[in-house]
Length: 276
Ligand SMILES: [Fe+2]
Ligand SMILES: [Fe+2]
Image (cartoon, rainbow, N blue to C red; front, side):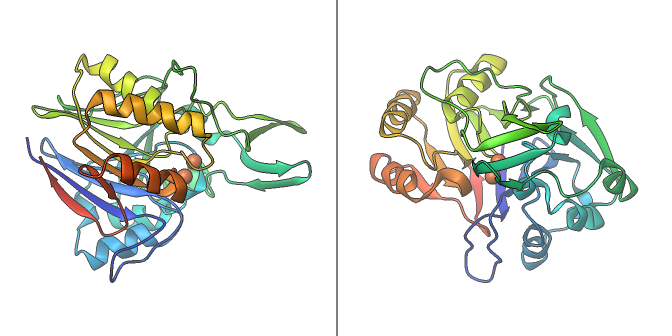
């Protein structure tokens, strides 16, 4: 199977493209076009036009979770796609915040109402379960947290009434493409853990071999121990292409670049690749 992966929005950009904090990745495989996330604002739609990509032929949008830097481009993108199904977890609509200290909260929810998006053609398919888009492409659904070293960023909260509570990020999901050369896993932010996500993809598909991992790993701010153990687990999985983006952060990206010199790359806005 041919898999083409095009990054429409990322924090940093290749020549001629807009960089914007967030992520949006277009996957073309198995006869369909699936857009994972839409970036923070204008960049996904703008960069698609730079690449002369016609988003009106997109078959599905998948939202990796309900943070604005993955969903804020929805209006701009929907104007290009027209009516389209959007697969996501129901908790994308929970009020979400970052909170560095008490009184220092910033709302980072989806910046639109469901109705606004439906008026632009969105048809939401909200489920906690994995969704099979084609015979070989599926979403993970809710990701079990099984490793003992991956945890959710302690600055992320939800608000219930007047109270802020840690966000379990149950809505965090990934996209999995099951190919003859192994699994290709597209991560949004991997808030529930990069390795947890990969293990879940293996369990769901019954396939051991992970060929490529592309996207946000949320290793930004990871402890030395977490980074070490992530590297050990990735090494054991023998991943052939490791393209990190967005919330990986500079120290972890630099470290992964050193550890996986032959397989590592920075996956920026404007990156296009054909696998294998
Ligand atoms: Fe996020
Ligand atoms: Fe993010």
